[in-house]
Image 1: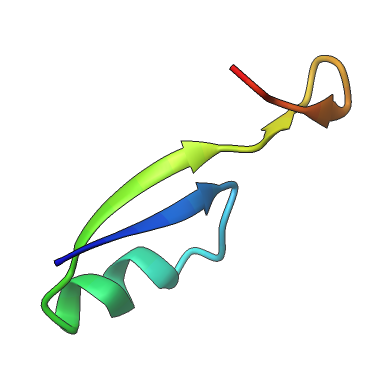
Image 2: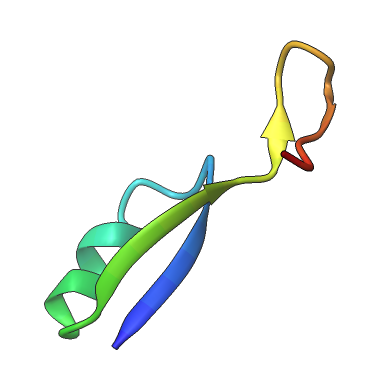
Length: 40
């Protein structure tokens, strides 16, 4: 199984999900340069 988590995220989240047997994928939702949502 795969779980998608946002970036940035809490530092422990990827490890917790990996230890639970999940494959971790990430996605961006925040663009720091525009201080807004990243829809790309």
